[in-house]
Length: 312
Image (tube, rainbow, N blue to C red):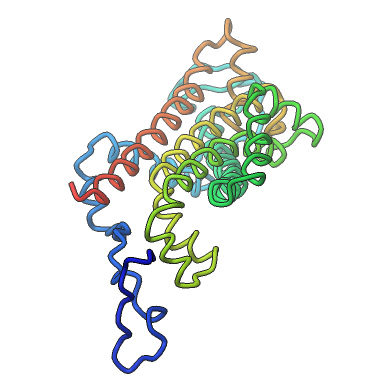
């Protein structure tokens, strides 16, 4: 509060003065909370977002109930049926071990979605709080954290992930830990930029004057302003993680045989391209659609948040 301002009068029956005056009464211009109905109304106006969301919901349903939906055990081999083209019994054909491609595609959805959630969660947990700390504190804290994240971003993502998996060992958990670490700088940069934009706002300074803790200021005032771009980063990161998991599994560093994943299915298809070119289409199309759907959903939700906050 400047020297020229007159302190607010204490509330009736209260001797503590300004400390008990609600923050909204200070007239600081803090953004109002975003209403959920407004967000949903804005999202409904975007057919592409709705279509992408429905696709992801269906994909999630398939992943959860994969054992009940798959017509065959995805790991059962029958060499007498190897490389059979699509037919009445095996709608998408069989692979080089005689395994049903449709069943493996269904179980692959479970692996890919779970892997994407793991990687995005690791990136969010690492990048978001560190970015908010760097943006809020500034100084040497910001300099050190920024240099670390810049170093992570300077290396090619897939090469860095392969290096980390090589150190930790092959496997889906280690692979997603590596991917999450590689994606963390995205969350860091967005959180840092959003925090720096609002850290000198009047309502932040008023909260400090009222004696609010740093954690409360971060959660109550900073996080809502960082949230819209973070949602887009989450959705894009989920799509990126799906593609990254497929890449690592394709190279044999992710899901290990005989478990099914879209990446391992692509690896099998590439080995039998001349004999069974149909094998590449199911996992390839699913990876493409999943990445596209995550991107559309994230962009739609972000635009809805921004539009609702601006009142348009």
